Length: 253
Image 1: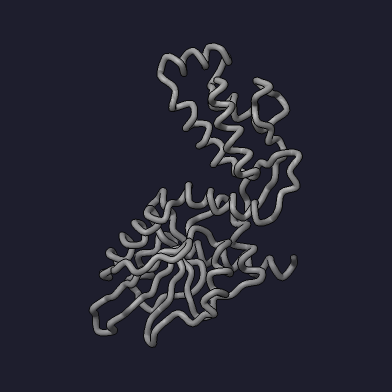
Image 2: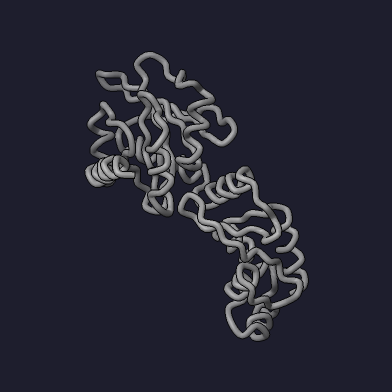
């Protein structure tokens, strides 16, 4: 048990701000490293599920051990729960970094890419992977129909990183005749999308939202010129209606 506390303490001290999901995964990793016999002994000693009890010990004032890390300070950020060291005056950069780490864990780029490629193939596009820079993945999709359609796609880990990505490119990213699409994963709540709507714009680019669990894509901003794309969205009417409601509500905020 001491090794678990030591490993978790080092992890918490290294990052200082950790998402609820990331912390749960790290605890699970530490407990899973034990032998079956040691896990059974630990469960018996603690009188319950080790992972749940260790999580509670770290994120509350009910400690299982004096060696337990203390991250009971709770923060809500972009619809997700984060914990930080109570003596640490966290910086916005650390919170943003913790959010980025969690987006990568919950929606890996390869998983998002798989959803996008599957979607485009259903719409009869050929997809080529381009270069990957920083936090984004680049794809090119071509359809050899009468229109010779080309879509330039950028896959990002979260809607919250779109403004920085767009600013860095100054909206000069497409060749003549290309459609530009930014793909982001779903979020736990609509909060990040609402925040994006309040103060950002992507010029003529479209934004699609990928659901890795359901292997689906829906529109967020923009309407594609290709009817096949529109027909392969999971729930385009509901998605656009939700966006319309958010925009109406923003006038009263």
